Length: 194
Ligand SMILES: [Ca+2]
Image (cartoon, rainbow, N blue to C red; front, side):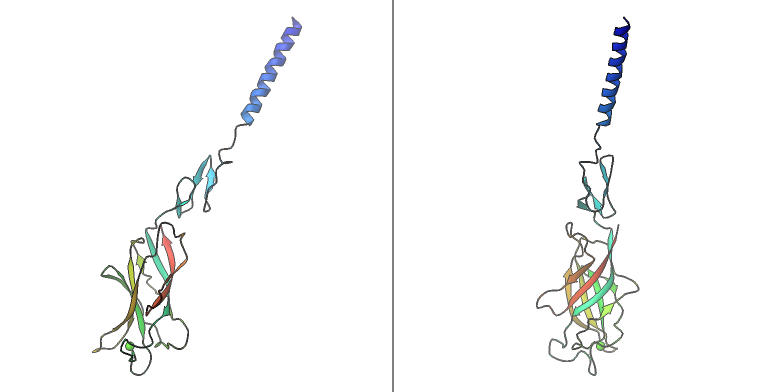
């Protein structure tokens, strides 16, 4: 009788140990989960960083707007379309404009010096009020103008259409708005706002 009791106690311990070991074998749901783009796993779910969403943080979140923090002029015409000088005595004094469709959304500061097209130096603008693209996935137009004094009106030097955002562009820090054969070119730094 005593042996049976000891046997039963032993069996009970064996069952408890077995049960315990099964409990320990419960796998971590994060072990088989990969969270992309800096996302972290918590109980099998990915916590994504600001810019990303989706099951594994692999889908871009569309920013609410994009600000242009730095605008570099990479190309501009030395002469007018008729071969004349922009200004009689020196190079053009330029500024940029940005349109959404036909609506002017931003006019930049005039570059402090007349441009010297042979210098090879790209004029760079750090606007106090940054242009803000409030519909980032839509098309905008950037234009270059030569400032003139009244009664002369400012001269259009060239412009390009651009999109600062696509669903798969991986959030570049800067964007080149350029094309072969175009009279003007731009490089802009992008700030994403969510
Ligand atoms: Ca001028």
